[in-house]
Length: 213
Image (tube, rainbow, N blue to C red; front, side):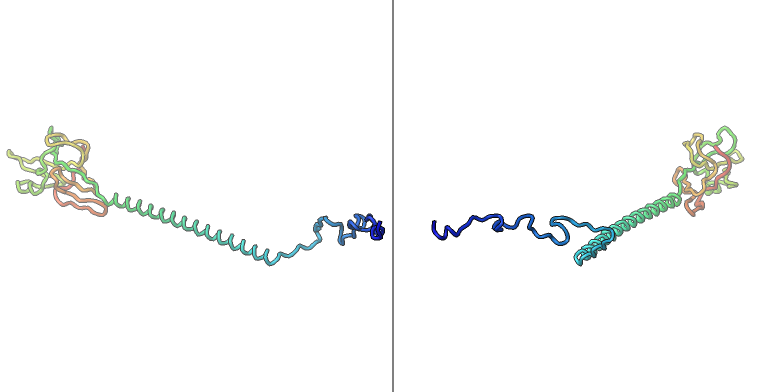
């Protein structure tokens, strides 16, 4: 064995060749290593960092922007709904006014007046025409047209409004009273009364008599 071999010794634990032993580790200040510490109720909270404050402000601004956008859209929908409701209301009002302003058209038939067997029989429209009556020696009184007969005397005629009945037939389903606010025309197309919303007046013929069907 050489001199160098004689001076060599195998390492032993007490020589600290493999590091310090577990029981020789220095104590960690503040408590054992690897443990967690919790704040108690007396510990003051840590103030937020600058980055945390900036992130919070950005989140609040984004939330406020979203709420403003949602409120703007809701207001727009309300305006659209209100506008649609107003439009519908105006359209309904205009439609109602149009119905009132548009006069009803009623057909008038000249009929025989009196209580005879031919009473209420439809005759030619000229028998109720005042011009025809006066040109043939007749006259008008209380809505009746009086036309002289060949043998003497007069025959009375008046208008029958609405209903049905051709010449030679008895008029039914109408009235001898002229309707108000209505346009009245004879079967031959002559307008004897114009009516409607704020429009009245007779343009020809005679007024309605009294009585019924």
